[in-house]
Image 1 (cartoon, rainbow, N blue to C red):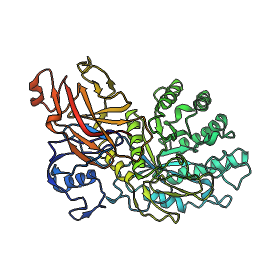
Image 2 (cartoon, helix red, strand yellow):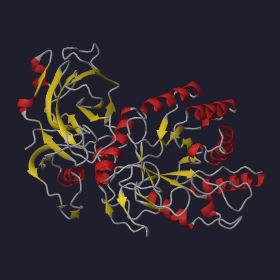
Image 3 (cartoon, one colour):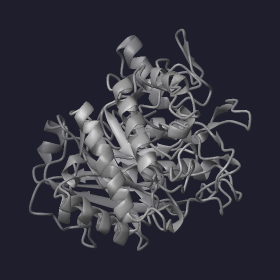
Image 4 (cartoon, rainbow, N blue to C red):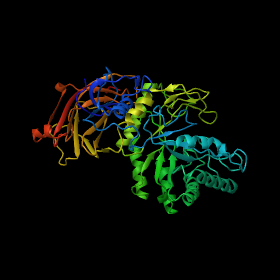
Length: 524
């Protein structure tokens, strides 16, 4: 049985939630609401609380785990909270009603392409029916994030119509682009407030869409959007990979024209086999951006991992991926972004059947399995793992800004809001901390960040200490499976300046938490 309270998170690849535990809950159904057999405990927990008002239940323990969390009593169970406001890329129409529990992802936004060439197949005539259906589906509880692209074949110099395409360049094509942009904003401004200009202008080191052309298209498009919808939020750049020189040239031109400040954020799409390996470059990108626009946020606008390999299937194709490695990758990306205060996205809802361009086979990055006929088959492991992340991390938690590694278990930071931790390994770990805004109870996410996710559940036993941590009775959570693991009383202890504080308050003040977490850290 679980000890009193805690919401879990990850320790090597993903996170999940936990609560008090005495009463068993079926994994196949709850009252008259049925979930798939693999439905995560986070969904069942939330529904149980809504239906019965109880926070007293049990859950089975896994024998193997990939990512763990050490957290403290009831940091919250909220599906669909406001933080980290993750997004999903929507390639086609929603295949289900997003207001039903079956969606249950806790995702706030859907990013989608507006498709100029698909809308204006006949010169001068718009057919928005296909996009109306998507927007109408998405606005039933979700916020559309509409990206303007690509070019149009009807106009000489109109740019290409797929990934890696050149931007429109001729006067006639640019005038037509302006007209389509205005029609798009006018049609959807009552339902869409988030817009993005173009997609991956530097894809494949595109030598046509140089920074000056990209900036020029941004400026004319920004002017139209802001004129018709002054309160609109506009994302810019959408880098296909992080090219720092390209980005700085773009920022410089936009600043010289007085237009960079009109953007609300800068987006990037940087696919790396190890999801943790690109953060040094992300921090460089942020530093360059803040030279020109201090405080402007970065937004991770598109990222995901396939559940299988093979050329012609898009980024990260050259690896024997699986549903397990996809689930590890996606949740490491979400948690890594959150640990760097970056809004995150996962690409995409369902596997995509591309018909032309550099991607010409089924793209396995969807978290719902499909086929070449666009038939939905079933959710993948990543679908449920993402639920585990969003069930915990919302605005009830705030990131602990300073969580530092030390080799001295007796070291206590001077400030109470600073955390020091030790680990019984010299391997690289990603460790981030979060604190409940009301109770000050904490969650720490821990995973090995050296590796490309592997098809293995092999684990290591490690010891950790967290100084200045606020714990009551911690548990360890596997974020991929959603399982909560009891940490036996013999394997953890807490101490504080005044031992009475441990019992008198729901957190340990100026103290430390020590635990031997069994099966908590995967070896890869």
